[in-house]
Length: 221
Ligand SMILES: Nc1ncnc2c1ncn2[C@@H]1O[C@H](COP(=O)(O)OP(=O)(O)OP(=O)(O)O)[C@@H](O)[C@H]1O
Ligand SMILES: [Mg+2]
Image 1 (cartoon, helix red, strand yellow):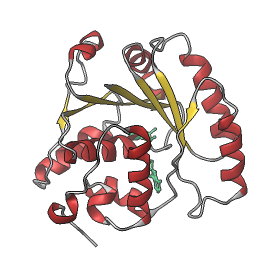
Image 2 (cartoon, helix red, strand yellow):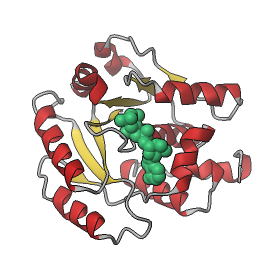
Image 3 (cartoon, helix red, strand yellow):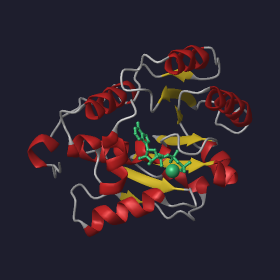
């Protein structure tokens, strides 16, 4: 399955979510490959960090200059990280994707931007591509006026479905990128981990998820 994690807005959490999903899928013994179409190459750097630190499981990168029409013949779970800096790549990847996942940070500008993004992709995405959004970086309790308003606003966007899981603004998500580890590897019992695992459950309901990292992960405090 090809999942594009995309959004026009910078800093909405595309790379954080793609990275954590890739590690989670690898722990679930799924074949997973990352395609990093963002010129910032965040995921490429993170894959390298894991390699240098010899963290298990290692992640596999597809060559970022690969012809995108070859994506469909790749086996396993493909996660594509792409933002506004590569709109051509984003639209091309979307024409092959089975799913587009959009992290949305609460805030009026982010909601408007998401709405505009949905309009832009309508003619580019594969007709069978499902479009899903979820709130990222909500206040810790998720009860702020901004979070409630954003939840109500994205629920009204008809061309995409809202995933019934959201991620709070939590320090472990920041540390995930700086350490090269998933939130559930670093703090398996923390709120960030619980929220992220709820997101995986909503996105991959067919996977009977296991938590092998409890015994095997590199736990840093
Ligand atoms: N739920 C969260 N809680 C706390 N920090 C977060 C969360 N999600 C993302 N971040 C942090 O926000 C910053 C931006 O996240 P990230 O790089 O994943 O966004 P992005 O959409 O990939 O950005 P870009 O558009 O620049 O590629 C990073 O420092 C990341 O650690
Ligand atoms: Mg990024």
